[in-house]
Length: 266
Image (cartoon, rainbow, N blue to C red; front, side):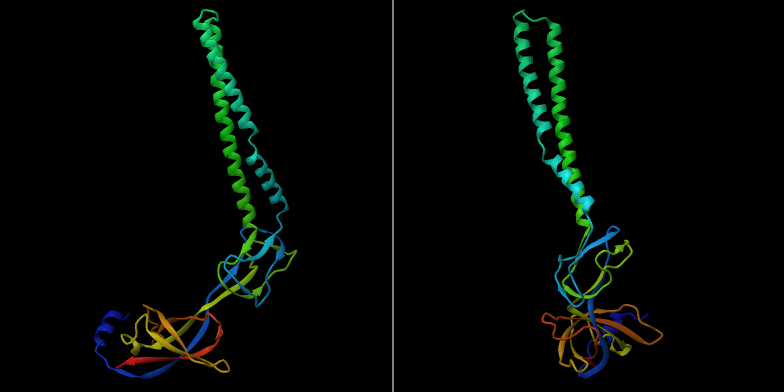
């Protein structure tokens, strides 16, 4: 393995030379095969091949009738305040009752035994208030769980891009290992090339490089050198590089062969 830093230092005093051309390939920056978190039946598909999509856009929905019913029940329980209000009302009653009992006891009207009973009733009512609040908190957590399960049945795009293919249809059963759709990020684009070893030390990440897509697309675009591999392919005597080509208005296409022009130092 060649030390790239040493090569760069040895050639740092080189003088500019004419641009040299190398073959390259333009591809999507990312390609994602979207699957489902849970197995089930596809209820709705909101995309088709060739559609432009945005990050977070709904791609498909799974059948969720049972999950919706579960969520509705959990929502009703979570929103209900009856148990807490009943427990609180009983607590306030027992609190007032205990105060009256203590006053009567101090006057010698009420025996100590009834004070003990009033205190026990008060403590039980206090614990029931805590229990009712804990039950409500548990119901709210159950609602969040039910809503999370529902959300898992909605497939959303993780990026801005274009639909390459839709591999399923409405009514079809899909497993967790199945691909529902394949999408590609085409802004930016990824440009890949394998360069001879004599470029080592003469290029660096961040360099601007001209990219010329094949005809009939043609044109000339500037890309940024994004990655220079640290491991050399000894078999072919080349080193891989990756460039980032901004493509906000889709002026060029992914999947094209291209030529890249490098202005190298001697």
